[in-house]
Structures are given as C-alpha cells and as structure tokens.
Image 1 (cartoon, one colour):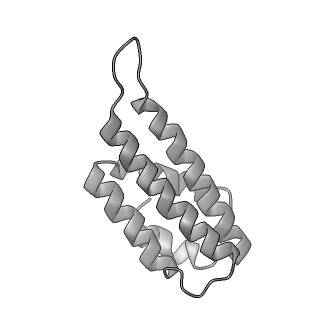
Image 2: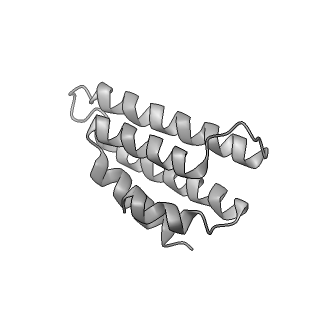
Length: 107
C-alpha cells in the first residue's frame, strides 16, 4: 500500500486507532530488521539495521507526540510521506508497503 492509497484511509481513523497503527508498523519493522541479524558466524547487515532503527525512532517519536496530543507532531499525511521517503531511500519500499497494508487490515 502506497501513501496515496493509505492517506485517505488513515485520515478516517480515530486518534487511538492511529496510535495502534503506528504500534503495528513499529512491530513490523522489528520483524523486517531480523533479516539483518548475524547468522552462522557472519556479520549481519549493519547498514540495514541502522535504517530500521532510524525508522523505528521516527515512528515511536510520532507515536509519543500522538499519545501526548502534542500539536508539534508531523501532520498525518506528512508523516506517512516521510516514512515512505525514508523507506524508498533505503530500498525498503516493498517492506513498508506491506507493513502499511497489514496494519490497515486491522481496521
């Protein structure tokens, strides 16, 4: 699911549902990150882990602002675009699209 498909659906969610959505996305990112772990004595993909960590940082920060009803947070559509752009930049477009789709299925 790409931002153009997600944003209209996301905008209809309640504040609580938006928070749940970002929790689900964060959880999906931790699963994707596991593919970068060291295996069989070989080093893991540290660069991928850094990207996943940065995505998770952005998401948890937005979630914190959402839960605290902080007006200084990113707009919903702007934040979705930020996450999408970071994922594309890192080559994780498919992963984040699947995470968006999976999370929206919960609603």
